[in-house]
Length: 318
Image 1: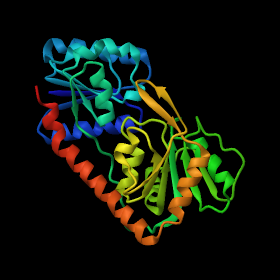
Image 2: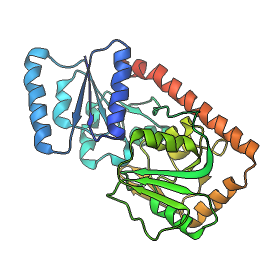
Image 3: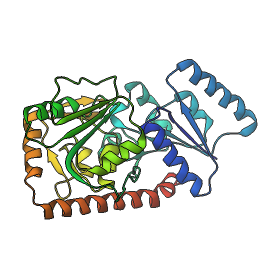
């Protein structure tokens, strides 16, 4: 039996748990998904229940922890693997690393980080939902999916657009916690609050350009989903974002400063550099736009196939 641990945040982490569980089930393994919330007391009760059940169920053959490490749960499995997001890895978890048989890394960038900590690492890649809907007409407009994250470079994007009323429409989809709408602009549509998934998918397909200058990414679902619809994606020229997107199918924006977030570097872009990048894609000939769109879709398909074909085999290695 394989057990999957993670934080059930109703967003990217929950999606990652479902994906890993699905691939293990398709390979014929019994799978138990344990998604913890934010309340420590509830989590401790669930862990106590798992320990009580161990007396008659025995230990899981394999446990996979996604992003979060739950030290009390590691003894519930014969083997433990970690799929981390380096930017959210906490110092207090470092002493647990020797208890993991391997760290499975979504990016080469993560592999170097955890390799330097003395971990046995394996590169697995990763994937995102395929959001393509070819029936949706494309517009020469821009989409920025900030979601509930504070590290998507949203303020710099908005600042650049406010300077340029001549630019096409920008749609920003953002949760209310970190939203700072600022003064209105005729070419900015700032959607604050929950937008249902069907509408998000329509927006992803309707916009030829996605702008995602993330400060940091554990993998980059916003980038991979943009590539899945064949969007020309503008992101920061920093790891791991530039592992997924390059100038053959997207547009890289140089960072103006580099800091740190968890174990990873964090990159900030300046509105001036966003202006340069946006102006470059706006003057791009239609044939070049179409070529980059096809390359983006191909890159998504290649990444998706590689992960799905290799993940279970790597996870089951001793």
